[in-house]
Image: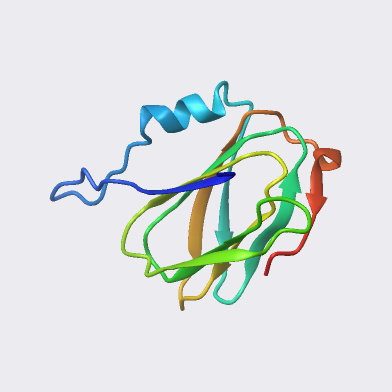
Length: 130
């Protein structure tokens, strides 16, 4: 399987939600060489690309409805999964797996992505999955 989806446990308290990335997810990425925080406005899509070399772990924060779209490589069937935005979700993505996140809600959607390689625009290849 080229993509893994894990709902993160909310370990929060009266101060608010709190989510910890499980050790296997950190092992998946290995050394974090790039990390970014992104906002996606309602109706917008982020992604529609794959990476040649880097593994990516994306945490989508709770707050609004969204969907994940992906393939298992070139000339494979596109798949998708809808989320209601009630919890944080971790998505682990292998190189060659095109992926995209669509904000299907009414408020901004926030995500944090960690990659095993430094950002290199030549290493990111467009392939539309949504």
